[in-house]
Length: 354
Length: 174
Image (cartoon, rainbow over all chains, first blue to last red; front, top):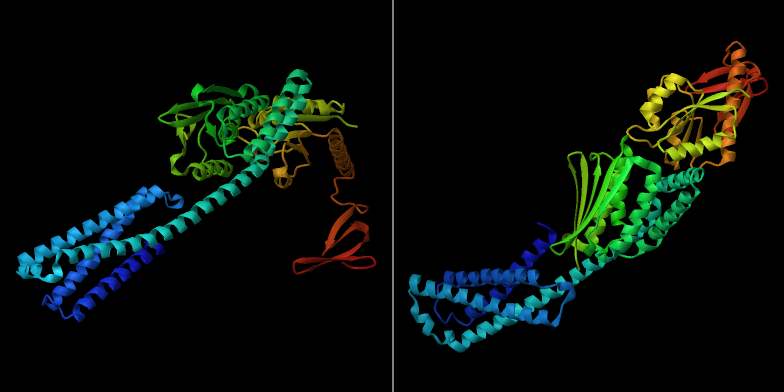
């Protein structure tokens, strides 16, 4: 149990004991009109404490499920009030059941129900009192919860911003890694000796790649179509390094082209597949990219020949970066997985459509 | 200038072409073979016994360092790589030089010049009866932050003091 939970339960016990204790004390000072046994009073009030804690706790659980505390709307307030009233009614009903049961069947004290203190108006006052108690309780709870959530969402936003900055740096430092850049430049130099037109095209591809990683990575999302252009350039450049060792194929769902995705995410998958898959194989291999829209989710899959190497730190870093970015942007609704299947490495990303 | 037999081990064909273009300016270098991976390179080197090896670091399956570990007789090795993250490691492997791709022609020429100098001194010392250090050779001494080049014939005596060696010269001591 974490500290927050312990504090919550301690406060629950403390608040309801104090409140109920005061009521018990008042009843006692007023002269015990119903002429109850000492232990009966204690038991009754103890049951009230338990029921108060139980129902406020249930109320809290319901609210947690239904309400977005960092973004409270007026409709939410009505919803909260409705649940509050239901909780009090249930609380009252349970307590009455308990009283009827014990005083009729066990204590054999049916007379207490005819006592003026148990009149209908007094019962209504009891319910209203508890409505007020629950209302104050909920008010405090929502306020505290709202503050905590607000802080949390601010932290998430800050982290997202700093992560983005980091990945912008990485575009030059890690993502478009220098190895790739200088190898490309060197290969282009070599290519000029045999095919100047091809070399010129490669220079354009390299410029496009650099431009994309410098400018587009500033935003949080980009159309999949634009990312595919980047991937195409990256593959072209990789092909002058790896030549026949690299084969590439792609199966793109037409409907996915305009889907917004975080920039550089497909690019990083492709880069991983080439760097840690194909370029390690003497005979080379194939990379295939597919996108698909299914069940309101975008599925991006990159498959490459090769096996998973767990020990390599650099792979882990790149992949952790992808996972982290998806987490920050989509929470738990986006997933990323990396599996090995019959001499192939399969990387899959699922992103919810907005 | 003596002829140098050279081997290129580099996985990218274009990078090999690029290197060959640089080598063209040095007619004394004869390329006796090229390989696109470590295993082929290993066979080639054992077969041709080159004087000079141009070696890429990142290659499929095995890297350039692994090739050096496999070899019994290591030629003069010039590493060629795209990025300098391996510079320090390469000198642990007794790299003769470390060239960054794309390679500058001047920088390349300097490196080859150094190879010739190195071979000449080797030839010279060989001709002098293989003696390791002759009287007119200089040695390098580091004394705290200061460094000295000292001629062997100037040394009077060595004294071992704990972990240090004290060198007495004709006129002073370090």
